[in-house]
Every structure is written in structure tokens, then in C-alpha cells.
Length: 469
Image (tube, rainbow, N blue to C red; front, top):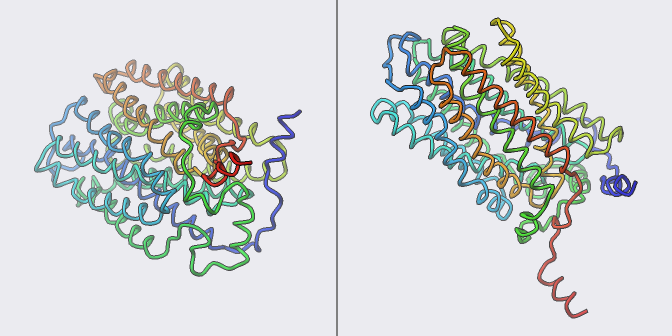
């Protein structure tokens, strides 16, 4: 009972939103949504692109690169070596100086590197592409911590699930659009190089727009109404206006049990998610036997399902929270279980039951679509635990979790020595299902939505006052 009372006492006091119109906060959310769309377009362009780059039959007018399965696995995982490095520093930087310029600069930098990819592949072979993808990873490591820091100042708790899930659903829309369009571009007159030109140009345009109209917080936006600014700032009762000057409580973060539960479920999610995302086009091509254009469409289908379910689930999640149908902790764990245990069940069925193309495509779609529950689960939990350090927490978990973003596809690459051997793919799916199951089990047992005491560390002045009292 005491736990229930404690959690209810931490719920923000009711604040009436300003009308039902499209507000400045929604405009900022829309902009950050497209930053995530852009980021994922640049991440996944190689998943379809590498199929066309190494198989001239998709478009005989463009060169074929002689990369074997092992080399392709190394290239596909190279992005995460850079991505791993900059997460935590980016979270600190965004918290201290604001996310606007770091986010805009990171997307612009990655867009320019994406434009160079065809030249690197043709003139420098696989090693040049490897280096280029590592450099892109370094830039993209700044994006999630910046977005999380931005949302911590712009997303009022009554709308948090919807705004947060909408912004991060850009991962799915970016994936859907890129996987589909990449397949069409690879088979079209521009060939596989056009995949990188289109995604690179889109990212450069977004970055320039963001640098012009983005804002770190409502208080720094030039045209937001006083009514909306007051609504947002009054709602954010656990987010301090002085968070930029707060010292990060590293020791307390490292020894926090809920933080460890959040990190471990993030590790599990990344293993399965990136294994499927990077290798699904190869599975669809080699096992299911679809050409490059059909491959792009089928690869995009699961992520379209994920995008649609994310929007539906987030609306339901906010209604559940507003009406207090479930405790916040129960709701977070329920959504996370749908995402990871549901995804694990679909992968087990794919490995053990599916015997037709139709059933394989259906179960792949279901495994990825149900994964949308994690947006209302562990991904929002950073803001629950410590709104003042949301960017730092995202930097920690998203940075460290990229160990499994690398290991998942790499292990799968070692297992699948013959891409047409279904038995090898079954092992990959069962391993991912097991990791999903274990990761969510830890979150259910040890996760929490209580705002942590270290969210508001004492200032030096407070410590001096306490010492002299």
C-alpha cells in the first residue's frame, strides 16, 4: 500500500492544456520526429543497399562489389563502433549546453558522410565504407541523447507517452520509407548509389531547417504563447529550470537498481531489433526468394506495422495514465512485455512452426510490430527516473546497449554461413527470442517508475548550509 501511495503522490498535479490546437510543443515534436526519421534512413540504407551492391542481377548497369557474407556482416555492424563512443558525452553536452546545435550539427555531418558512401565503396572498397560508417556512428551517437534532453523540456507528463512515442516512432517510419524506397531506387536508373544520395540530401535539408527553427526549451522559443509556456513548465514538476548547472550524480546512477534494469532491457532490445533490421533483407532474398524491389517492400512491412501500433499504443497509454487505470509502473511493464515477450513468442513460432512464405512474413511482421510496446515501456523510463538527466541516462543505456547492436548481427553472421540454409536462420531467431525474454524479465522484476532521489542533487551551497546548520 505504501508503494501505491508513494507512486500516486509523485503523479503531477492536473494541469489544463491550452485548447486543442496544434501548439508550439507539437511543432517541436514534429521537427525532432523528422530528425529520428533522418537518422534511421541513414542507418538502414545500407541494409538494402548492400544486397544490390553485391548482386548485379538487381541492376546490371551498376558495379557489383565482391563482398562475402562475413565482410557484409562486418560492414553492417561497423556503424555501432562509432555509435557506442559518443552517447554519454553527447548526453552531458546536451544537458549542459542544450541539444539544438549538437543535434543539428550531428545530422548535417552524417548527411554529408552519407553522400560520400558510393565514392568510398567504388574507390576504396569495403574498408573505406567500414571507416565511413564508423564516422557516421560517431555523429549519430549524439542524436538520441539530444532528442531525449529536448523532450524532457517540451513533453508535459499528461502528453508524454504520445509525444515521446510519436517522436521515436520516427525510427519505424524512417525504416519503412528507406527499406521500400531503397529497393525501388536500387532497381531504377540511379542504381544503388542513389539510395545514399537521396537519404543524404534529406538529412542535410532537415539539419538546416532545424538550426533555424529549433529551440532547446519553451523559455528559449521566440514565438511560443505565454499560456502554452506556462502549461508546459507547470506540468514538468520534476524537471528543474536549473538542470543545465546540475552536477551529474554518477555514483548514484551507477548503483541504482532501476537504472541497471533499464540498461539490461535496452541491451536485450538492441540485440533482437538490430539483428532483424540488418539481416532481414538478406533472409527475404536468400530464403524467401524475393527480388530487390519486392525485398524492400517486404522488409518495410514489419516496420510499418510497428509505426501504426506505436501511434495506437501511445494514445491508449496516455489514457490509461490520465484515468489512473493502472499504476504507472504496472503500465510501463505491461507495454514492455507486449514488446519483448510478444516479439519473443513470434520469433519462436517463426523458428519452429512457420513452413511457408506467408507464415514467415506474417510472423516477422508480428515480431517487429509488437516491439512497438517498448516505446511506452523502457524507452520512456529514462524520463520517469530522472527528468533532469534524461539525456545522460539515454546516453548511458543507448551507448552501452550498442554492444549488443554489434554482437547480435555479428553472431548471426557467424551462424549463417549459408544464407539459404533455413536451419541456420532458425538458430538466429531462437537466440533473439531468448534475449528478448530475459531482458524483459529483468525489467518486470527490478524496473521502477519512481523519480529517483538523485534527480535533484544538492548544490554546493545547499551542502555548505547543511554542514553549518
